[in-house]
Length: 289
Image (tube, rainbow, N blue to C red; front, side, top):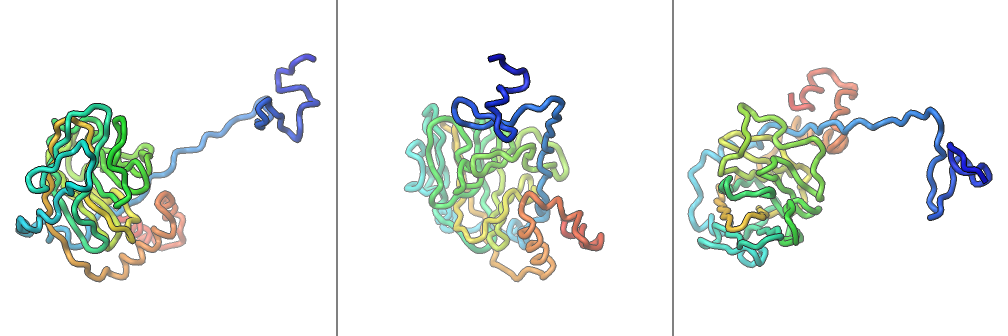
């Protein structure tokens, strides 16, 4: 029996499809068929404005040493390759190859606005220097070099080396953080970054050189989250300093309505705001413009 250039013999065809030897099905090739390529998803629109009360929080005098120690690294909640030093304010990674290691803070939060300064020398970061937050269930050690913080659904991390966000083991295609620097370009992040967790709005962001870089992750309400880092660089040292917290305050009705619209659309459909039957000023407000 001769083979056809356009598929298997007619008697093997069935309803426009043919069966392969492994019992799977494949579409019948059609001459002149033009395949369509789906465009990449539109970028999400996330709030670039800082949380209410952040400026006041960052301008306060540092909290006392006792409160800092209560919000330091947890020596009982870290990878076996990490050593907690300086009464819990510093972690040091052992020089072990082919491992990724993480640590959680002592305290987790489900309410309020909180900020921590993370001091991580740029010369000690390697390819996967992750800073962010994690639940109690997040993995703290794995083999190989990976972005452990953000590798699953229990943690959210920012790769300081590649400036990429990571959650559920997926990098957001074509999206770095921040999308654009507020006032200047920078190839390497400074040694200090500030982790900002707003559990009233359920979002996570970062401050660099006094400038808020915008929302990195949202939809975090209902969780109890701990500050966390994961590292791959041998003998790196990462210091944590709890800046303090701001008590929850009632949000303006306009902000609550905007948040409800974004939650209804979903994270990757916010580009559809343009198509809503709204006056231009309201459209711009929903787009944080």
